[in-house]
Structures are given as structure tokens and as C-alpha cells.
Length: 291
Image (cartoon, rainbow, N blue to C red):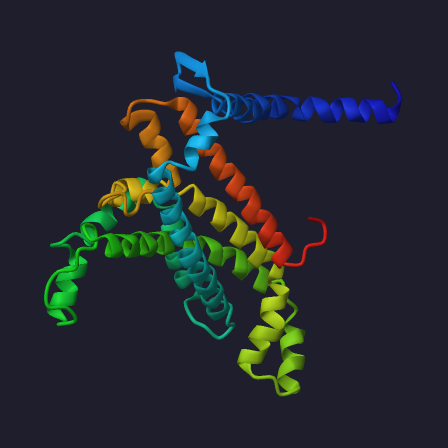
């Protein structure tokens, strides 16, 4: 073997196990799920139904409700979280700020907490007799407890607050890392030219953070389209499916309702299609010419 062939052989020997594991536990299940989306029934009794499952999506009222709720969380929560994460990162990047390490750790800490644990805590905090209502009542902001969990509108607000609390610090780390790689002389030159802090942010910071904004937007969109833990543990999709998401609907189709793994796989691929569409749109809006 020549040197190039030997190098290639050694390289493949290092990554062969990883490639096989990825194919076995990632791509193979995806292919099987796609095949299952054209079938109906449980895992031991599946029958081929063709495109009937995909046609069923358009007449399924529960699917439409879950899709609407997921879109609502997406268009409201993701922009709020991205803007908040960017704003916090700019504040924490200030060289004159004291206790920066403490604040960075405190804001990032929710991202490493257990999804189930924090969801259960939020459920009790926002209960009818929870700490949030008690605090608002004692401060005379409200005259009666708010139905954070039992009212359709406030239940959505509770989920949005929970997701924002959990993931803002996670996105903040990316922005903070990017800000620390921006040459300080750029801001110094802008200050000499008389640029205000707002202009520095809009004309320098935001354009230079464009790749990170695109990355966090896409990952946050994917995460929101797959939202499950918070809804399942805080509201259980209620009241009356008011907070049910696509991922919870897949769970219900598989384990709560009469099991229909084929249709559940179809809804799963509906999420895949949505992720692809939103990712392409975000790349296009960002001006990426490679898409």
C-alpha cells in the first residue's frame, strides 16, 4: 500500500466503529420509521395503508390543534429567547462588570438542570396556590389567583416562561463566545467616530453575530418543534389540548390512545418536514447562497 492508501485505511479504522454506530442507531431507525409511516397498527401487527396516514393528517383535528400550539410557541418564544440571550450576553461581556463569572454561571445553570425536575417545580410554582400566585396576591397585583395551569391562555404563557427560563442561558453562551472573539478595536474606532451604544450594537454587534444568530435560531426552532418534556410534566397538554404539541401527540398515539405506531411515525415525519422547511427559510432569510 502506498502512503495515501495506508493513511486512508488508518483513518477509516478510527472512525469505522462510530460510523457503524451512527448508521445502526440513527439512520436505520429513520428509514424504518419512514417505512412504518406507510403502515397502520401496533409494532407486532402492522398493515400497509399507503398514503392514507398522510391524507389523515389533513382531516385530523387533534393534529391541527397540536400543530397550531407548536407554531404558537415557535413564533412567540423563540424570538423572545434569542433577543433576551443576545441582550444578556452583551451586558455580561462588559469588561467593567463585577462578578461576571457568578452572573454567567447563574444564568447558564438552568440549562444543565433536569428537564423533568424543573418542569415539576414550575408546575408547583404556577399552581393555583403556588408561590407565584401568592406573591402576586401579596403585592396586590391581582385580586384572585390566576389559572396558570388550568386556563388555556395562561397555560400557554406558563409553558413559554418555562422554556425561556430553561434555554436562554444556553443560547447566551454562544453569543458570549462570539462577542469575545470580536476585536475591541472595532468598537473603539466606532466610539471615536461618535457612534452611540445603540448604533454600535445594531451596526457592529448584530452583523458580526449573524452566523451565531442563524445557528441559535435553527437549533431553537428544532427544539421547539420537538417540545415535549415541559408540556407533558406541567400541563399534560391541557386544559383541553390547549398546550398539546406535536411530540406529545406522537406519544399519545403510541402509548395513550389506541396504539397506532404507523400514524405516530407519520406525525413524526411531519415534524421532520417542518424542520427542513424552517431551516431552509432561515438560511434564505440570512442570505446564505449555498442553500
